[in-house]
Length: 111
Image (cartoon, rainbow, N blue to C red; front, side, top):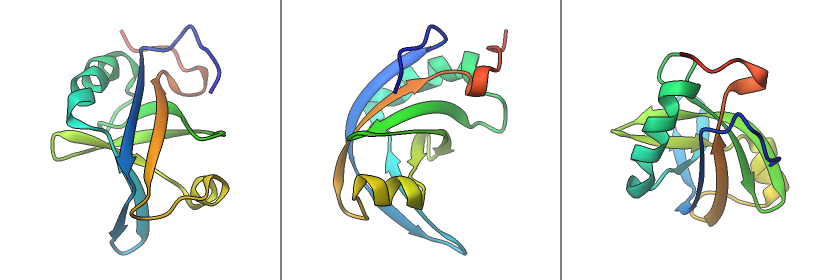
């Protein structure tokens, strides 16, 4: 995860990987409750709609971009299969996450 002047918040946390078995299975790392307000404040400038929040994240030595999903007054960090495989993580694992909330792909921050 590169340093970036457009970063609105940097957050580090540990979380247990969750497996949601909906119509299509997904894996997520929930943002801890004590970090949610930091994300919420940064999202005011970085979000591009639908309540999702663009982030650059790192798990181990795996860097990736995604968007946090709002869920039950908190946020979930989606973990795509390619990211999980490369990082060697699955449901039930506890992972360390470094994350930066910032505009996606050079999009200007909203006013």
